[in-house]
Image 1 (spheres, rainbow, N blue to C red):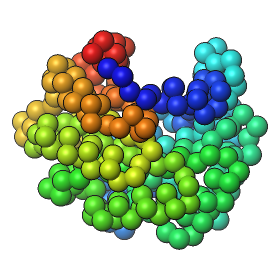
Image 2: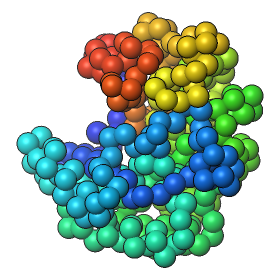
Image 3: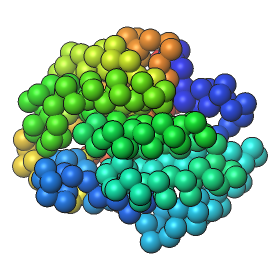
Image 4: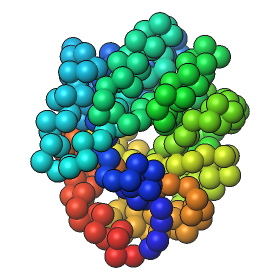
Amino acid sequence: MKYYSLNNYLRDTFGEKVYKISIDAGFTCPNRDGTIDTRGCIFCSKGGSGDFAQDRNLTVTQQIEKGKELVSKKIKSGKYIAYFQAFTNTYAPVSILREKYYEAVNHKDIVALSIATRPDCLGEDVLALLDEINKIKPVFVELGLQTIHEESAKYIRRGYSLEVYDKAVKDLKKIGVNVVVHVILGLPGESKNDMLQTVDYVCKSGIDGIKLQLLHVIKGTDLEKDYLAGKFSVLEFDEYLDIIKSCVEIIPESIVIHRLTGDGAKKDLVAPLWSADKKRVLNAINRM
């Protein structure tokens, strides 16, 4: 199964292997602070999907250095992407965003920024800042869409409409940043065809990259309550492989596939337990 992987894209772009360092910059989310809701998205962990990020009590520079230590034996190039991962990383006054982003972008070993956020947290002032940073070093903006289907969006408490996503992609492409979109495969009530419709829509929306994320049920989430109550079942291993294969077949070769599965913290993973063996999953995908 051929596809344009993130690893290959980074080698093509930067000339060698580049590692991401996950950062927790201390932000929150409108889905948690009461602006939209206080519960977060139904699947989101207590760490705001930044469970592999560094300690938010450290400065951005300190987190970068800690991240470098963790992969120092694996990497020769010394090139890294600062990945603002936990919670919503454009959801703060621009003065604070500017301080955090510039601390990362000015680090000599950082070659790009990757900023995970929501499509409804991209005001004109934020876009202007991203435009400014992108002229210094490349900026990737990762949008958590998950699904195009309204019923599913309501269930997961996403909190914004598909039109908001469409506008965000257009606004980001106007300033030339690299747009990556998260899609969850296996949401309760969605058929394989529903998932493929989401992937097809996203690919036609003007994006540069896509992350295909297997739905994980994580301890302490409202999704866990529904799962334990028997309200839905998670994807089986072979079922997921079949869906991934069909997704890849409709993703244009020009779009970079950043992820084909996902990493749930093993200590917090409720289901599907087979997904904890990431090596097995990736090997099976690569054999297709």
